[in-house]
Amino acid sequence: MRGVVTSIRLPRLSPDRVDRVRARLARELGDSKVVADAASLEANAGDESDQEPILPDVVVRAENAEDVAAALRVAAELEVPITPRAAGSGKSGGAVPVAGGIVLATIGMNRIVDIDRAEHVVVVEPGVVLGDLHRAVEAEGLFYPPDANSLAWCAIGGNVGENAAGPRALKYGATRDWLLGLDVALVGGEATFVGRRTKKGVTGYDVAALLCGSEGTLAVTTRVVLRLIPKPERVVTMMATFADVHAAGRAVMAALGSGIVPRCIELLDARTLDAVRARGVAVDEGARAMLITEVDGGEDDAMESAGRVGSRFDDAGALAVLVAQDASQRDRLWEARRQLSPATRAMARHKISEDVVVPRTKVPALLDEVDRISEAIGVSMLTYGHAGDGNLHVNFLWDDDDHEPRVEAGLDRLFRAVLTLGGTLSGEHGVGTSKAPWLRLEQGDLLVDLQRRLKAVFDPKGLLNPGKIFDESARSGTKGHRAC
Ligand code: 2HG
Ligand code: ZN
Image 1 (cartoon, rainbow, N blue to C red):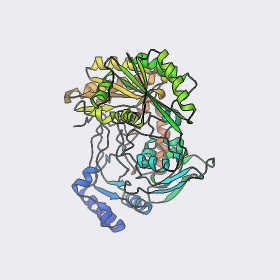
Image 2: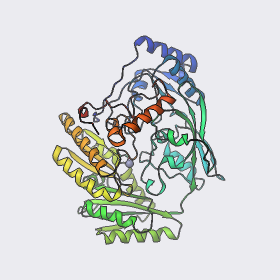
Image 3: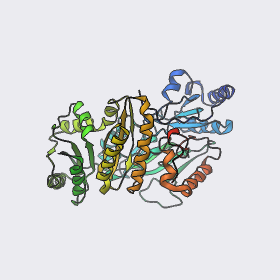
């Protein structure tokens, strides 16, 4: 059973209105694309966050941009909430239809439309799975770096909505850094292209950048234009173990000071290593922290770069630094890393995983605070994540339902500590419903209100993905002590 800490429910449509909406959608789109059977509603109710799943009233299975526009037109005309959804792999409640209404599913729009080798551009529909995109462009000798760890099932539409990142963000950045343009449809059904298809372009506001990370609250993506680069010739993967997380934290800083930019430096703390061992990866019992690091580059220089980073790890007191000897060793290590989210979920009945960011020099201070929080609230915690970016997944794991208020208190303390350290609440999973109660704490009233006004420009009646980012009512336990 998942942990349900975030629970927001907005008023729902009356049964009469539900009937009207279903009938109208079926008329506009055809019966096969408009479903409301129990299994379909349930399959579109939740995501991978701690937000309680909520059933929509109807699901539109869009097959093309015209379907998306038609659903948005009906939503506007009948004034019905509409929540876009790609793979539903999000981790902050973004795809949960908290007001019921329509779920607009774009996962069926999964064509890779064009891979332009000359321009280093790929054009895809929003339902394309990230791992499929990687394989397709790499077969052409090209490379799309963002690599959310859910790449086997997450889809590009959601990646754009959340500005998804992943381990390789250390060298290559997140989705927004690779996004050139978008075809989108607005509430009401109007459609337009925003951004560009060329490498450079500065006309007008950067609306594509604004929509990327807007969590499906401003417009719905129907096509995505992404930038590519040549595939690196060689990748070297290293695993370094340490006696404690502080030594690992020092090693991260030493590696970053080496003059090499590794494409990722992933940290796993002691409890996380137990989960890795349980997945069949041999890790020395004395190791209490691990860094998985990768460097990439040309055939000749990647190995030399790896040597330089590895010797920084040795100087910082690594117990061992091992270089993956072949593709199968490397794949096993990454498989264990990429499966950490489900593997740690299996360690307790309830799990919440945060994605806080601190300046990377402050990673050891954050880890100390995590230990103090865990002790203070009596809830087991573990941490892993993208240490090179200072972006850590701090996990709360608990079995006893009655411990939920303790977790709430722990979350509040964690977020305040992160902000005090100069950090931000989310590095890659977004605000959604999960972090909405703390947004003002980070951004202040003016910025939050400015963003609400922007939202009203795109969606004056608040029909598109309501209840996300700005709704502060999601966590009853934290109400009352949310003042900045
Ligand atoms: C990761 O880095 C993902 O594995 C998921 O961002 C993190 O769910 C999690 O704990
Ligand atoms: Zn992550």
